[in-house]
Length: 297
Image 1 (cartoon, helix red, strand yellow):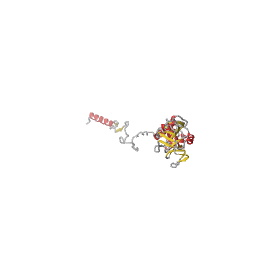
Image 2: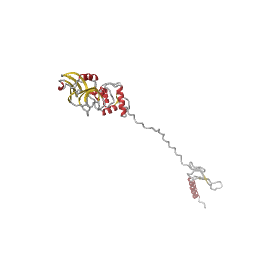
Image 3: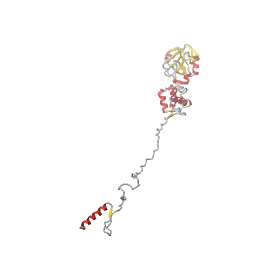
Image 4: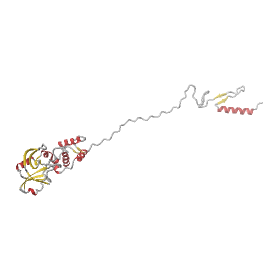
């Protein structure tokens, strides 16, 4: 017994299911037989006989391509350089002159790097003395006095006195000691560093003198000349003592080559040094054995 309504409903359900599965049903042929399902390609669906979500036949499964990551550009290696150290400021150099140069020369004489002067002019000998001082202390041998060289020199020396700054300049003689006002006297003052040759209170000549060093001081007091020796040579120090006039043991008034060359930068072993050879030659000729020698502070 045929139930047309129910068959039509079944047929509609089958058609809907076939559509969901990607198939369609052929209409019945002329003979009235139901057609077979026909596969219909849907956009993006795999082909017949191909597993869903799998590559086609003969195709290797590959991972989706990943865009290459751009590598950062190589940065050239740069070696850091230390900042340049500025050269010390030059204070004085060859051709300069003035009181500051005179002090520089006096200090160089204190450390025995300069044998002449001070003159106040930055000349060749001064430049050579500065080079020697710099080289001895590992500083660049420029010959110019820069701030570093000056600081090192100041640390090694003392402020020069007037006698060191102006060794050749005449200094006013101190007032005569009262003990010199009678008779014939060599009147010597340590304060003014001068020697007066006096006869009966009258000054006949005056000259600059230098005295003993710290550990060999010149004795003070009233003495007499007991021996004169024109070409004397020290038996203790083997140094020449021309025009020597002895007044206390081995201490004498005499000409000094060292005093003439270095000025007050040096000192004697107790003698009274004279730097003016002409002046002491005249004095030597006038002084007699027994004449008075007064050495005062």
